[in-house]
Picture 1 (cartoon, rainbow, N blue to C red):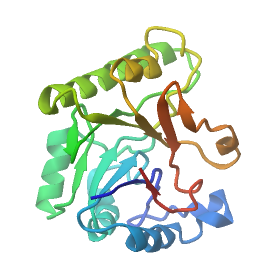
Picture 2 (cartoon, rainbow, N blue to C red; picture 1 turned 60 degrees about the vertical axis):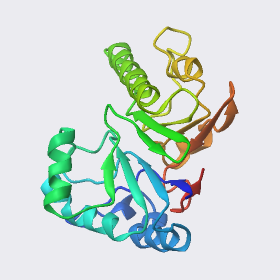
Picture 3 (cartoon, rainbow, N blue to C red; picture 1 turned 30 degrees about the vertical axis):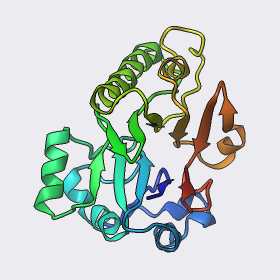
Length: 230
């Protein structure tokens, strides 16, 4: 049972928001993702989607996007991105899944999952430079710690932990107590997946092993709309 990841699908199957305005590589990107997905993912695999899944403003408007995802093989775990305005409480989102018979999708939201010998946790994160950035990062770092604690308490301390974030975990507050990486190191996290970055900005993306953690940047346009095996 393999684990894959791809971020920033930016689907808009139920609305008119073409992604090719951001570049020719986005032309029919949903079909590119689908083709690559079907080549790799089996029904008993897991796919982690760390944010910006759908452009819909309300979850009901994202139904076609969820139908698209539900028809693809594997179990899918979604994390909130900065453009996922449709995101609701966990109770409401799971009710939406149940009402529409979407049985192979769930959410990472102040919780954790076990997949074989690995614990899946995460939070949206933050890296924008604005007046209240420190407050937001402090909150998101606390959510990350709570998600990890939930996994450790439920599934034990001997499991490998995979962290999903939407924003890159690197920011100007790296040396402060609210550092995401410091929290990951405290819990011996081995892998961190993130997205959010597109276009020219991907040239500055930090990847590979840093401080003992393997960082993977999974934005779909950066991976050529393909999935990365973890």
